[in-house]
Image 1: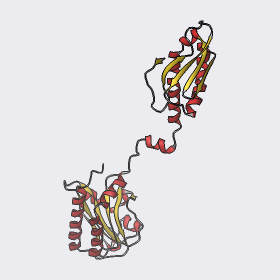
Image 2: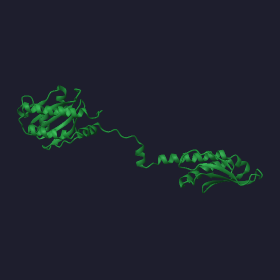
Image 3: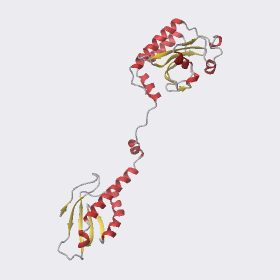
Image 4: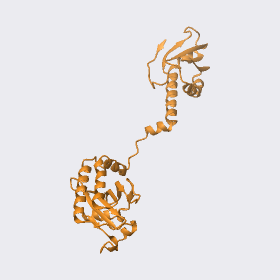
Length: 276
């Protein structure tokens, strides 16, 4: 009995030895060689073996090659059988490799998804989650409405490319939700970003500047208050804004108090993980 070292996949059979029915027969008489496997092959492995073993039987001159339990039976002349072991080892490795390829290409959708790299998360989703980790910000929006009498307040992330609502308190039923974008050029918060100063008016229709401004008419609001939110290092983050469809008196004292809330939001966001 010749022993063979184990190699290849741990899930499929390996050759562990060869045995001959007799060793003193004439070289041209038919004999049977038993190839011992370390385990019983699966049905899939058997099908792959049957498909790939035909060429070996033809090329090596053996008359029969078949699986039986946890062994391979090979019939042929003594001369041909003595030349067969290296070819059989290569055949077994080839069957296992072919089967592994089939498993990989026929993976279930769940298995395929597990192998795919995770899809990058949208920065908007990350920023909304960051704000959500600070429940005091929601209470600050309530404070804004209580201080000003306005019915809509939001924390917005404002960059040169986008305006995104990160937290919203909507008692005016404008319908804006956290994570939603607006065209940044069509927001007054963009003016806050550009100027670094609040934008405030109590009655757009009678205001010397905002009576002719297109945005209050576009969105249907008459009163508005928007102040900058800055991070601890002084970088502009976005705005704390509030508005109402109806005219609402807004005083300088209100602006000071809302700016103080915006400062607290900036402090909270400075402690959050980076958003980019």
